[in-house]
Length: 114
Image 1 (cartoon, rainbow, N blue to C red):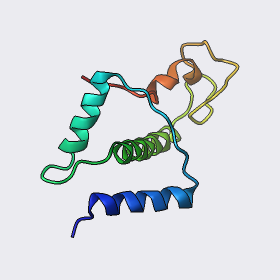
Image 2 (image 1 turned 90 degrees about the horizontal axis):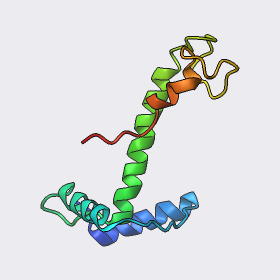
Image 3 (image 1 turned 90 degrees about the vertical axis):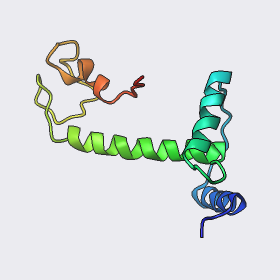
């Protein structure tokens, strides 16, 4: 049987307390708030919408999992200039077009697709 919103919130509080959670303040414009509210409901059709904090926390975890996969794939490659294993965070060749440190960050940045 699915958890009630109160049960989900209680579980979330327990996870936060166990993990040493930190409360953050987030500023969103009206368009972002509408998108967030819509997505919280759309991701749980026929059920109570996700709570805003719960939804944002899940997005963070989803992004972390995607980033871990991306980094794992990068670690199998080398810089075109210095041949160091990726990701290269600093390199004396930075600025050279073949050096991953010059523009490789573009592979890991967050992208918003329309």
